[in-house]
Image (cartoon, rainbow, N blue to C red):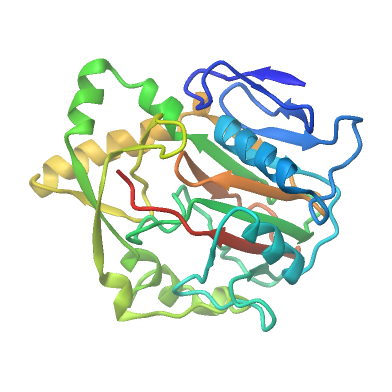
Length: 302
């Protein structure tokens, strides 16, 4: 099946594959991937050509959803390694058999979820992850969807004047608000007890990245600021930085740039952290949600 890329998507023009049935989720980004005969893919047996097709679909659609999988932590780690080296989260504990695989669990009595707010995965690192793969073990009967926003489309949606201005700027990123002393993980520890979260002074370290980054595989430009980890714009007074960041944060997650993934047990979703932000909705209180998460190492934003 061939699909035309939506405005702002990478992979200019068309994406074609005889190995995949690609079903777009929304105009801005996102696609479900199936076998050409309409049956579910089996990612545990897919060959190198199939992985290359998935990677091309990821670069084109930014978020790919693969239904009806049967996976545990080792199987998810094996899948992730097909796309690159896995990395350990600096502040979250992994499973005993696969330290790079993080269980993301919210129990019925807990009120605070993990990932509840727009963010770009670990942008506080010198080399943030290239992609994330998240597998649904147990999902609530309703709620718990994940929203995604296409940051390449958000960049395209800026005026030419703002594009040029943004391309000249860099911003400081830090994990302090999430994993530092008196950060969210520290304050909400009792309300998110099922997650193994380490609060550390190291979270206050700062990294500077460009506000507009270039995708290393497609050359497409994307906004690269997010509310969770971007602290200030380099070289600006605080009030100037705050005003511009507020505008960019709000613009970047406009409805026209988004898609929504509804989870089912056995759903595997992979997204390109070089071109998207995501937001895990916390609208299923009193129910359990259990996911497995792995991230694939990336390069420094440029």
